Image 1 (cartoon, rainbow, N blue to C red):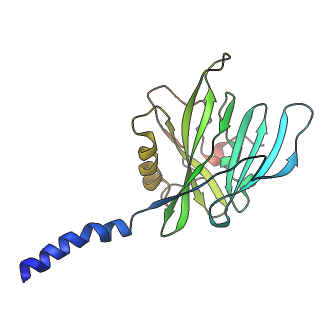
Image 2 (image 1 turned 90 degrees about the vertical axis):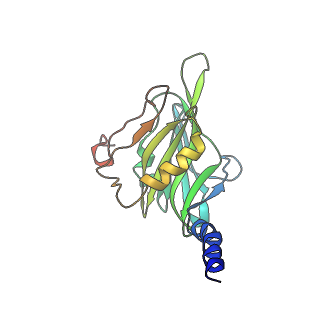
Image 3 (image 1 turned 90 degrees about the horizontal axis):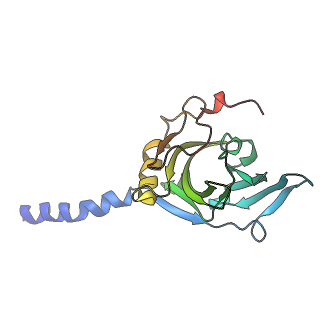
Length: 195
């Protein structure tokens, strides 16, 4: 009987462990169909800003200027640190957004971006892991899309780094890449140039 009890414990333990694991949810966006334009573009380089629905009422804001995008998340996404960063080369944030959930609450996002590498249309992709921290959101890590098992690695990194130990104000993002750096400001939020 004792042996059966131990066997039952070990058979049920993985299921119990899995029940406490972080999970993912996905939301898609389309600037023309699912998002609302909140700021009109101009006749020069600014294309405008859009607000899109995210996970369970969270918002996503995308602003495009000179073919470079800025993305923020949260209740006031346009005022977050994440919204102040973009890649130096022409870029596009891609849909869908992966939201990492802990006990059903989003604590990070993973989003793939397409970034040009030259003036002839060449491009690579980067995964941007963003910590969600109340009204703040900040980049914690960048993974080259060509990095081995990049999507699964991004989930592990989000789970490990986007926690209470990472301080958006003082901690800068890190990188996993075999193709060099991503070409983005790696400063902590408080060290970013004034707007």
